[in-house]
Image (cartoon, rainbow, N blue to C red; front, top):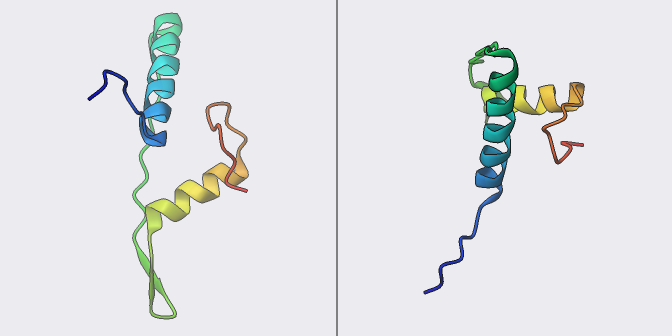
Amino acid sequence: MTDSVILTAWQRTSQRLNKTLKAELAGTGSIEIYVAIPPDLEWNGLTVHGSAGLELGLIKKYSLPWNMRSAG
């Protein structure tokens, strides 16, 4: 076994955002957080995940500096 740590894409994103949030809090002292929980839907017999669809829509509409990969 080695001492090296293999980070998943989610973990790398989490670490990067954690650093960004801490820096922002150190500068302004506050961050606004919004929560949206869209319902899952059904289309032609297929379940459509509401939260995943909302996330993709937001990524496509806004060019956010912390979004390292584009959703296309």
